[in-house]
Image (tube, rainbow, N blue to C red; front, side, top):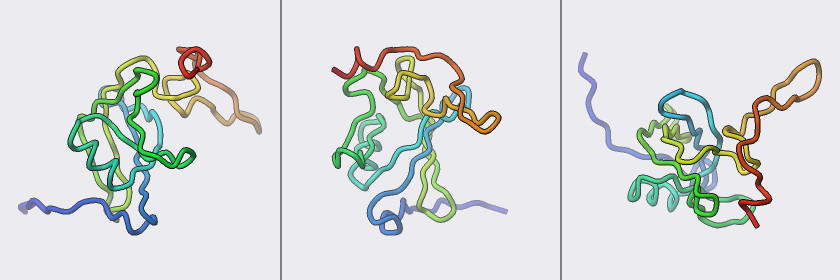
Length: 130
Protein backbone atom coordinates (compact mmCIF):
# COMPACT_ATOMS: atom_id res chain seq x y z
CA UNK A 1 0.00 0.00 0.00
CA UNK A 2 1.40 3.37 -0.99
CA UNK A 3 0.53 6.51 0.91
CA UNK A 4 0.41 9.55 -1.35
CA UNK A 5 0.93 13.17 -0.47
CA UNK A 6 -2.33 15.01 -0.04
CA UNK A 7 -2.12 18.78 -0.08
CA UNK A 8 -4.72 20.29 2.21
CA UNK A 9 -4.80 22.34 5.31
CA UNK A 10 -6.81 22.99 8.40
CA UNK A 11 -10.51 23.73 7.93
CA UNK A 12 -10.99 27.00 9.79
CA UNK A 13 -14.66 27.21 8.76
CA UNK A 14 -15.69 24.42 11.13
CA UNK A 15 -14.75 26.41 14.23
CA UNK A 16 -15.95 29.79 13.00
CA UNK A 17 -12.41 30.74 12.08
CA UNK A 18 -10.58 29.11 15.01
CA UNK A 19 -9.23 25.63 15.53
CA UNK A 20 -7.56 24.10 18.60
CA UNK A 21 -3.84 23.43 18.58
CA UNK A 22 -2.50 20.89 21.05
CA UNK A 23 1.13 21.72 21.84
CA UNK A 24 3.52 18.95 22.81
CA UNK A 25 7.21 18.91 23.72
CA UNK A 26 8.95 17.27 20.76
CA UNK A 27 11.48 15.49 22.95
CA UNK A 28 9.48 14.27 25.95
CA UNK A 29 5.94 14.14 24.55
CA UNK A 30 4.66 16.23 27.46
CA UNK A 31 1.51 18.18 26.60
CA UNK A 32 2.43 21.80 27.23
CA UNK A 33 -0.72 23.70 26.35
CA UNK A 34 -3.81 24.02 24.22
CA UNK A 35 -4.26 27.18 22.18
CA UNK A 36 -6.29 28.33 19.21
CA UNK A 37 -5.20 29.32 15.73
CA UNK A 38 -6.91 31.27 13.04
CA UNK A 39 -5.65 31.23 9.46
CA UNK A 40 -3.33 34.18 10.06
CA UNK A 41 -1.69 32.45 13.05
CA UNK A 42 -1.35 29.26 11.01
CA UNK A 43 0.34 31.05 8.11
CA UNK A 44 2.67 33.02 10.45
CA UNK A 45 3.66 29.78 12.18
CA UNK A 46 4.47 28.16 8.85
CA UNK A 47 6.40 31.20 7.63
CA UNK A 48 8.49 31.73 10.78
CA UNK A 49 8.77 28.30 12.41
CA UNK A 50 7.67 29.92 15.69
CA UNK A 51 4.26 29.18 17.15
CA UNK A 52 1.69 31.94 16.70
CA UNK A 53 -1.82 31.72 18.13
CA UNK A 54 -5.03 33.69 18.28
CA UNK A 55 -5.76 35.09 21.73
CA UNK A 56 -9.47 34.69 22.35
CA UNK A 57 -9.36 36.99 25.39
CA UNK A 58 -7.37 39.80 23.74
CA UNK A 59 -8.81 39.16 20.27
CA UNK A 60 -5.44 39.46 18.54
CA UNK A 61 -2.61 37.48 17.00
CA UNK A 62 -0.06 36.33 19.56
CA UNK A 63 3.51 35.13 19.08
CA UNK A 64 4.14 32.70 21.92
CA UNK A 65 7.08 34.03 23.93
CA UNK A 66 6.93 37.60 22.65
CA UNK A 67 6.64 38.97 26.19
CA UNK A 68 8.11 36.16 28.30
CA UNK A 69 10.93 35.04 26.01
CA UNK A 70 9.58 31.47 26.22
CA UNK A 71 9.19 30.85 22.48
CA UNK A 72 8.06 27.64 20.82
CA UNK A 73 10.07 26.46 17.82
CA UNK A 74 7.89 24.17 15.74
CA UNK A 75 9.54 20.91 14.73
CA UNK A 76 6.49 19.00 13.47
CA UNK A 77 2.87 19.71 12.62
CA UNK A 78 0.10 17.14 12.43
CA UNK A 79 -3.51 17.58 11.35
CA UNK A 80 -6.32 15.38 12.67
CA UNK A 81 -8.61 13.30 10.46
CA UNK A 82 -11.39 15.92 10.52
CA UNK A 83 -9.02 18.73 9.42
CA UNK A 84 -10.03 20.83 12.43
CA UNK A 85 -7.38 20.25 15.12
CA UNK A 86 -3.62 20.67 14.97
CA UNK A 87 -0.89 19.00 16.96
CA UNK A 88 2.28 21.07 17.17
CA UNK A 89 5.44 19.38 18.37
CA UNK A 90 7.74 22.11 19.62
CA UNK A 91 11.06 22.83 21.19
CA UNK A 92 10.10 24.94 24.18
CA UNK A 93 12.67 27.73 24.47
CA UNK A 94 12.74 28.89 28.06
CA UNK A 95 11.54 26.96 31.05
CA UNK A 96 7.77 27.31 30.76
CA UNK A 97 4.89 27.19 28.33
CA UNK A 98 2.27 28.34 30.84
CA UNK A 99 1.67 32.02 31.55
CA UNK A 100 1.16 31.16 35.24
CA UNK A 101 4.82 30.15 35.53
CA UNK A 102 4.59 26.37 35.17
CA UNK A 103 6.25 24.31 32.45
CA UNK A 104 2.88 22.93 31.30
CA UNK A 105 -0.55 24.53 31.44
CA UNK A 106 -1.74 21.12 32.69
CA UNK A 107 -0.12 21.42 36.12
CA UNK A 108 -3.26 20.64 38.13
CA UNK A 109 -4.34 17.06 38.77
CA UNK A 110 -7.72 15.77 39.97
CA UNK A 111 -7.18 14.05 43.34
CA UNK A 112 -9.86 13.01 45.83
CA UNK A 113 -12.52 15.38 44.52
CA UNK A 114 -10.40 18.46 43.94
CA UNK A 115 -7.58 19.76 41.77
CA UNK A 116 -4.10 19.70 43.26
CA UNK A 117 -1.11 21.57 41.85
CA UNK A 118 1.67 19.22 40.77
CA UNK A 119 5.14 20.41 39.87
CA UNK A 120 6.72 23.70 40.73
CA UNK A 121 6.41 27.12 39.17
CA UNK A 122 9.57 27.97 37.22
CA UNK A 123 9.00 31.73 37.07
CA UNK A 124 6.93 34.42 38.76
CA UNK A 125 4.36 35.75 36.29
CA UNK A 126 4.19 39.09 38.14
CA UNK A 127 7.84 39.65 37.25
CA UNK A 128 7.51 38.54 33.61
CA UNK A 129 4.18 40.17 32.68
CA UNK A 130 4.39 43.66 34.17
